Picture (cartoon, rainbow, N blue to C red):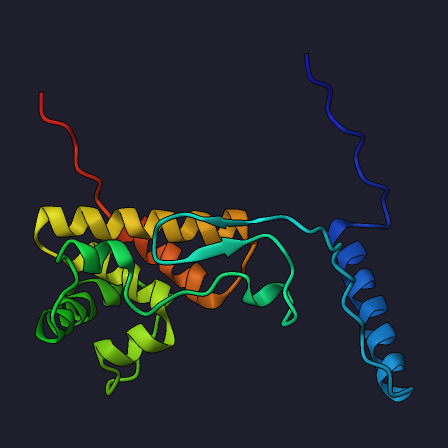
Length: 188
């Protein structure tokens, strides 16, 4: 049987505690700025491990490089599995997929905003994972959609789980994929 936690003390609510912590952080940051100091990131432990090649569009290395841990995963502009089996859409198909996403799905995706002049090629260049997620939900042929969705899962596993990468591109791509991807169901 679970017991309830003791009620909070009369004078301190959770909100008040959080506000107090925020105020303390603001004061600390202001005092560091006044002294000309900048907050220092916590140093990452340096463990030398071998590189791992996953046979997809990226190669992963667990060893820190001279440029730091942010350059461990080097994406290429065309996912290898899409290009290798002919599933990569042509420029016209890419624009059609982007148009379809804009007209049918974007109005229901408040977490995204695209400038009216943005093209599929520009989006692909600026936010490659978001583009891949859009492609995986807007392609209309089943085999190509399946390949794109598989590539989304592979890239997501590499970047989020293995590399601990965090970016707006990954977040928005993940939201698009989770919101709009309809996995095929086996037929009995």
